[in-house]
Length: 85
Image (cartoon, rainbow, N blue to C red; front, side, top):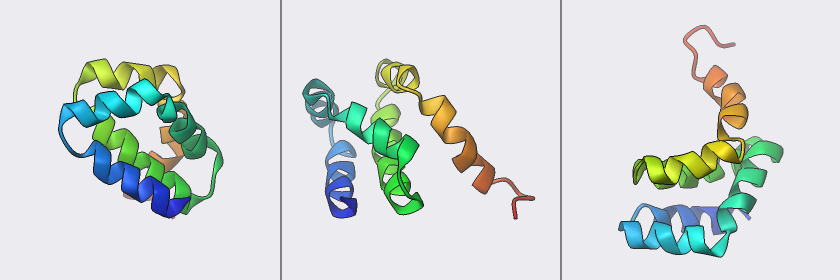
């Protein structure tokens, strides 16, 4: 699973047309599910995909937020806090 997500993250870093293909397949719902419910290693790979997609503009970020991105990102952002243990 981790390797498949890594491959998809490489695909989504490319031109916007690649992101549109990924969005049209519906696979981002699975990526969001994995981001919200899997182990840290899987969540990390899913986050690379999410970041790549969001980087292409707000029209791509909005659907991710609707699928729970903000809820899922809170614990991960806590790991980056300066005083996190």
